[in-house]
Image 1 (cartoon, rainbow, N blue to C red):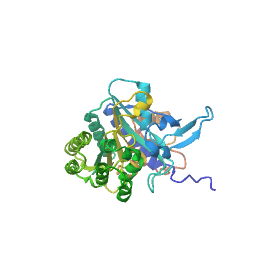
Image 2: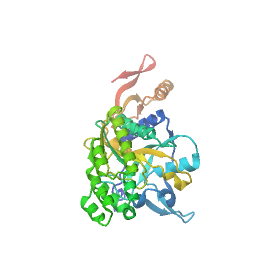
Image 3: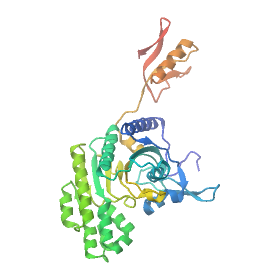
Image 4: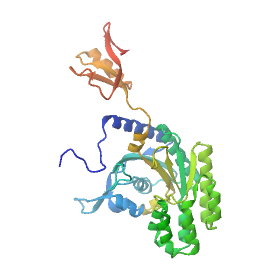
Length: 385
């Protein structure tokens, strides 16, 4: 086998793409900071049981495992950073008030999410801990829309769901709860035939409720239909109230197109409230996902209200229309103290200055040198090319 071949769905990031990713990463982290989010950097690998405290079987299947040669214990390469950040909030920071944390780092998946997806994503996200009210959910959704627009993405559609609807149905039927994994997979895939098969032995209330969920999709008016067709339970009514409030806010305040999809339950295993996905035109998969997960911290000794979102920066950079090709200043290579001082001043001011090595004056594929540093009357000055 050729030594330069990489594993399937693993790829190098070349200079132009890497520059674009890094520029967007800096822009997103700066925006998080402007909202008051503190950055954390969890390790790439941890003991497996720590990584798999939540997320269900799906997260387990997506996680690479290896043996730690120091302890003999099984380690996992993280497939999702969110549980790690929850651990930091619950166990290390141990704050009592609201905590806002953000992160940017690689995650690895055993299998790609889609046909052309990479198994090594750059996951960027933000989380709020310590506030159970809808204000935190609203802030996270607004921040999601904000950073996607910062990346140049337009016509964003926010797709809302609520884990409380399914939880309320399961609470009414123990048999349904026992097959939860299979049911939410069928719901997320809108596999009506599989759903009909799975619900045959359930109570009439649970069976009808589960079978109607895939049809409860559309604009905010679908919530009125849901109130009529779903069981009249306080938990379901509360979940629909939450969705109605957040849908109205996203449409009026943020100008986003909002849809409701009560069967979009990907990530249901650790979500406990409102869930959302963000879509843009021309891209079949969600470009960002988020939601409330109040119970994840319990595994680390302290359950805290929590909500957040994440995105794959490599995918967002791929579809972003922002041009990353940088302008630069071309400088000659010369042993000259004044030249070195001028180059240093320009770089300190944030300019890209490239000194062309002898014989390579035009080998500048990755930069657009629209200016040049030239000597005029004993001084080095920048001129247009």
